[in-house]
Length: 295
Image 1: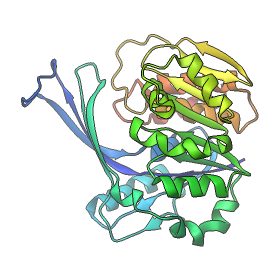
Image 2 (image 1 turned 30 degrees about the vertical axis):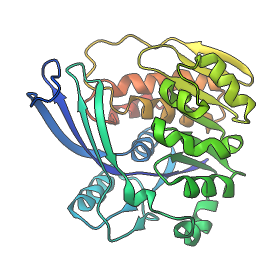
Image 3 (image 1 turned 90 degrees about the vertical axis):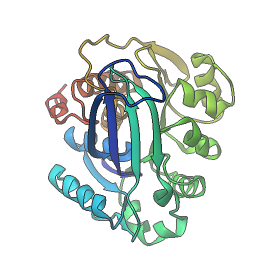
Image 4 (image 1 turned 90 degrees about the horizontal axis):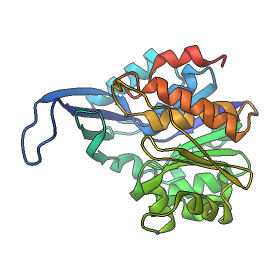
């Protein structure tokens, strides 16, 4: 089954503190610059796992865009159908605490959010040629909803990305085959504070969503198999280098199994294995997940 991932490819600027973070203070730590973006991470993971995957994103015209193209070329993933514009690259700036957990972040995605449905019209034949489409929610609501509804006859998989962006999906939930979110995104999507996860998943299914995965740090992962709700314990790992990209890895592994005809239980279990492997590196993707292909 051929897969097209559509969404953000951005520059990740990540700072990790060596000690407990102090607010309104310059904290000693380390800073890295790498290629990221939820869609880019999912595309990379699927590529490493051996999926027949391509990537459609926005490529700008600044020096960071050169870095984007260079790394995508090095990975080997096909991004030839990406949109090219004379704009700055999307950027994600984050601060992690000494345990490698996210403390705060700022994302500047205004240019990819500025893409309109008509920007994708020349690519209709290309998009139509794929069996499954994977989205993040970094596109604007109007564009994201247009694409999901336009191609609702295909398998549609989506990562919710954030509380402020997942709400863009409310109108198209019935067309989504799998939505991966966290507890905070579940709250935002349903407009319920501290929503009970099992109740929340049932609510989403009642709204027409076909399948859902809800993760929350190292707490059990909640998912459905048909209309039944299940929870799966996460593995307690030590020596975690970074949690960045773990959620992207979880849905990537799940999608990889689903496009092979596996059920949701099998997909979630494999997604957990891919996520665990990603926790072993500081980067958002771990190329060693290639070793998991035959599991």
